[in-house]
Image (cartoon, rainbow, N blue to C red):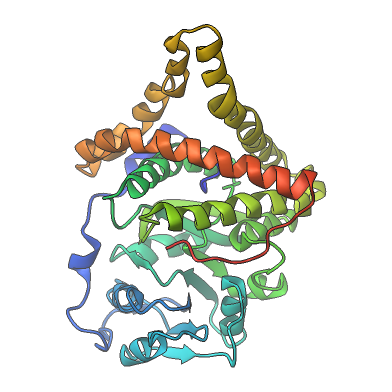
Length: 377
């Protein structure tokens, strides 16, 4: 599992249930409470045709218990009034002369003017729990920490694709990410919500456009420069996830090709970063072997032996999925939502396997690299 991406005591820090929309100011353009603490932080929001969500994102930032020094929206040559809506909220809006073509390009445009100690990158479809920034910032106290990321859950959990992603995220951020953090190597500092030390971010060249997964590229580059990345489960974000197969297809294609592109780009440096090397090896094994088993071996065995019991292999790992996630679901009062969404997870896992195999074939075998950045919502 590539989702992106300690001991059991960490699980007690899992986030409580909130309704993100209920925490936001009622109108846009409100001046943030001057009595709130400032963070020494600049927030960058890359946005291309995000009129439907940009106001909610800005509201959630203006409602934070710890305020940013500046919020910069990069209106990446939108045609739907995204920039005007953002400007009405009282934030800084930058608009390039033409579309930059990638999220990384838009982020780098804003990074040039950042002068604060820390930079927060957040997607234009993402809202934060009211204390997310305040919870995340202490992870940057150690000078060698270059980045920190938080807990991610879909804002909407309705369609089969949103439900599959909900279980996928709940499992990844409850089980995989804490283990990765224990070893000091989260596989990815999530692009939808991550904080960076500005000086290090600028020295490393900002976000690179050489792959379709700029957050993974940046995270692995930081490790190879001997910097640390932290995961803070108490800092919660809620992005809008793909609600139709059309949008999910675009996102999975971008993520799958981006993963393979990063392995190709970083494999020499990865070899000397112990735990990261192991995690990527497991991910590649999952991409090749597990995907082949799900898509081909299990149905072939069921047909060859005329025995449908082989299909149990699709769901045999349900206990491994439920055990770690159920505790977080109980704390969030989402047990029914978790259990009713489990079938959708297995559908999404099967679809994800198809895209992973296609990316491996295209990028490594036929050498047909995919480089078009398509929005996934």
